[in-house]
Image (cartoon, rainbow, N blue to C red; front, side, top):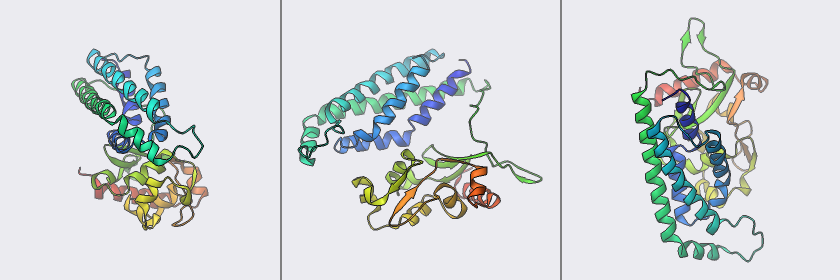
Length: 283
């Protein structure tokens, strides 16, 4: 197994983390109505699979991935054929029509989804097992990986050039610090996933998708963000625009220079991130 395999698989997990896959399956099996929001994910997957040239160096991972890839493409093609209504702007296609279409194809969709889930879990298991068996190999980290801030020297914690939010192992992380495990309790997960997928866009609360509005209901948006771990300087850093009634802007990554321009106390930000990690990390 050569060095590139781990980097390839890390990109795959970042694109299709277990948490996102679970939500994807739940949504498409509920009525198929959320297919449009995953078009970008389908395109990103195609780009990733083209980038690796359909080949892992490790034969066991490669053969397992090829089986998964067939399952993924079968599910994707079925969804796009039967449930993609985003180009139909007229009012003729009402909700009951969408639901009827879903019911007509529900059994076939469920079989494809179940096969996809099995093949996904098998690929993740095999890849992790193979990389564990080859853990003596030193893998070069991507050049753009954000610096972690958990290490501390005589002058204080390391100050990275960029702070970045990521979702890994069902948790929300910022530069190696575990902020929260929203998926474990199911609280506000749909809301956060929508913000994460639309990072960098100012979103009007009144124009959010209906499923997001249902999750918010009468909750205060700021309280929901606090529940996800975004408090104090962390909240200000990644949500420069936030309101309980008007709009919200989430930044997935932001440079130290920009944070300072916005009046963020970097030392306090780091202290709050490290404190959150110590509180939430099982280690």
